[in-house]
Image 1 (cartoon, helix red, strand yellow):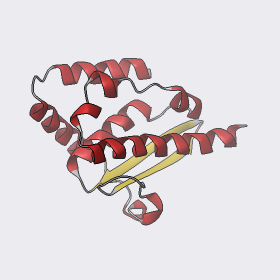
Image 2 (tube, helix red, strand yellow):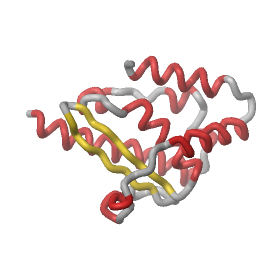
Image 3 (tube, helix red, strand yellow):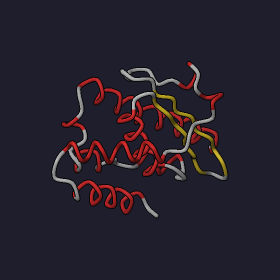
Image 4 (cartoon, helix red, strand yellow):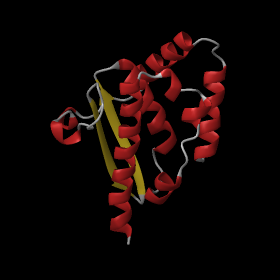
Length: 140
């Protein structure tokens, strides 16, 4: 499934809720469904700088595609990273680098996050793209 289709699904999922409290509840559900990151990756090496909460992200490169795993000690943040993984997982490095994550604005996520969580969102996206850049350099 392409990234546009997935982002459209996310937009539709969030459109079903009128209140942001319900949308936060949905993020919590997504967090609970996110597969656990390998315990050996819950270390400083995988910790994202710039997040108020602790967020660990790892990526592996397999058959030309990037596969992410992540975790957070904050449930809302974990739901947000689950959304990012839903869109970017299993893509080529080039696709990840070229994907416009427009669903973030369309669902109103950024403006409904505290400034520190919004900074964390940017840091998570940056780290996921840095993994993709590193893997892209291996392709050349």
